[in-house]
Length: 306
Figure 1 (cartoon, rainbow, N blue to C red):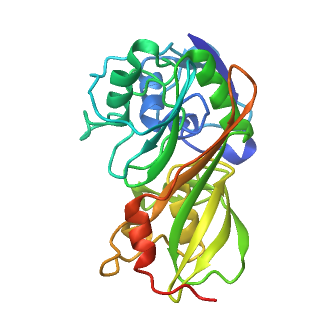
Figure 2: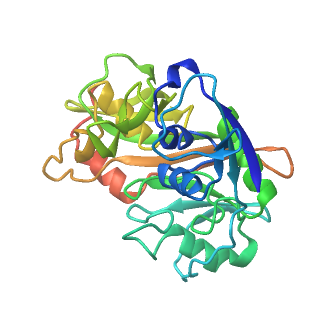
Figure 3: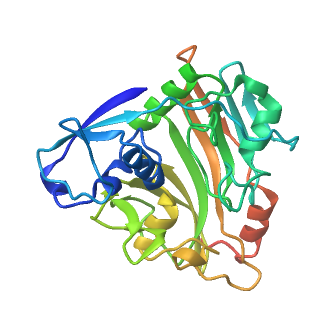
């Protein structure tokens, strides 16, 4: 087990403890935070804390995080497009429509099921029984490069690189409208949408810093083809940030992008991945081609503007 100590900052005063714990780097979700609280693993001055408790600045909470359980998800022989693999890491070009890990409503057919069949028992256990080897995620309807760790050393190294931003993820996307500048940065915190808990939003409440750098690749009359580099990795970050600046992704109806006739696909592809190899310390840079569905969407946008 791992024990963490969390001191409440002034700006966090008045928030619920379960919401704050869910923002901690070692806790994956609010549901995991709730389980820790229900199991009495969150204490203050030796006393267990209730999950609805409101916190006060200066309070210090002790959080005991159990070790990850061995993976119990079923291995499934699902073909994988492996871009890179060695004894420590594997990088896969995930197809659009594949869920990364099992969750309610998606018990099988996920990337984790496929990785367990491909890698056997060699995936790291740091991510927990439902997410063995998984270091970061991409949405079901987003395709492209995703890295998984084959041992705990590699997982810890890659997680640290995510935290210090030395692991770089590059995405190609199509957005509505014309971006006036050739490049820019969206620096706006992201958290659960207070009006719809199923969505994320730019918000100051229970949020975490989020930074997306973008540059224009091609302009069209009604759309712009862009490349984004994530400095942070929040849920739905590119989708939320581009909608925030009034240029939602083509086909992303959740965050305001219309599904124009013949262009119903959400146009977001994880194109590039750069990281420091956990074992060798050498830089690794990987790129993938645009998938056919993305290229088809580009062809339907009309002639590029000069």
